[in-house]
Length: 60
Length: 252
Length: 222
Image 1 (tube, rainbow over the protein chains, first blue to last red):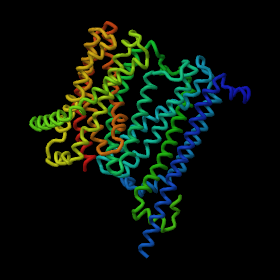
Image 2: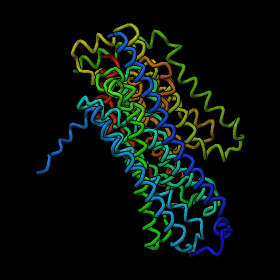
Image 3: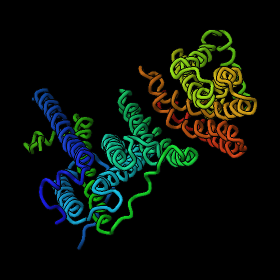
Image 4: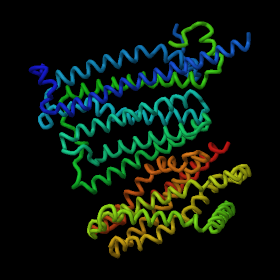
């Protein structure tokens, strides 16, 4: 293990801002993107469901 | 006896929807596992760099993001071209699904590049060939997205996007060459960020693992978006309505 | 083929001649935009001379983009574009002719203004020649690239901005080597290589842009 303590780990040899600034933004983006895509899929599924419901009502 | 897989069957949106649904859990799992291992090696096994200290650890996301931004663009142009030439709807939908993810990776490459550049070279942005080309790639993505979103007619948008993506793909080498040349001309003002730190093989391992992790992630999120696009476009078709009527969870 | 080319070209030039003010707008924009830079960065001759080629080139780019929205829009609006495509004549030749017309009306005047603009920035003889020559080789490329963008965005609301977003990245090579030619002359070296590359870019674009424009027209009109 390279890091003596958790504090050392977060400090990143003085480069903490840059390393964690990069990783934090990347992590946030790569969590938000799938969430947005899944939400889009859910909405599309809902709309498709509504379309199917209306078609069924039209047939019966 | 093995069944021959007829790959062209997945050109049908319904088959793609089915297959991608089956693959998604594995893709997310792969992305998570590869990320965990890659970052563990990157942060707890790989040593401190002699010249750059701890700041070099940004490459474990900067380089994979940059590589993927380029791979996704090529894939996007390829599928858009297939959709145009073979009149295959699913291919065009795949191209549209790829674009936002590619743009995101490009942005991440630029952001992490800036955060790496500041401690290393003293400036948040340097106009070196790689970063400048990455910026232009972002413009190419944004142009594609803006154009397809601006056209209401779906098929016209698909074909117009395909033309733009292909023209972009053809021009990328020309643009990269001219930016490289431009950069060497004005060498005095800039320092090249292409000189990667001499990498211990353990650093390379971590970087490769993260590249595969990003790749799995890209497949997963693009599949999710492609499924959304399929449902949006094919809402009136029999198979989508079947899916609901049979009580198969349309929300799965 | 030549008859078709000439017919379309002469028609476009005639139409431009009838709307002289509209045809001159790009040049006016060009001069006004360029004049803003000294106001923005200060009047020191040394600094202005250094940034002059870049400014002139970028403003030429933007001026060319501005006039592109009308390239096909007017014909599309009154139905003559569809007629032209329906006749079965080569859309590629039409595209080439329209790009040529655009350059003659919007590009060539910029090239002719360039020496005067260069004097405003205290550029010297050889540099002025290099600037003019680089623009002469570069502006046709811009017209050709722009015609692809114009055909793709036919009838769209935000066509102007879209054309800029689509075409500017593609014009970066011409920009880099065009300004590079002037920089080379300033540094006392020959700009031969730059002119060669600009020429090669022009030939490549002249061969690939008209077919791409023709394809774009078919996509936009059908």
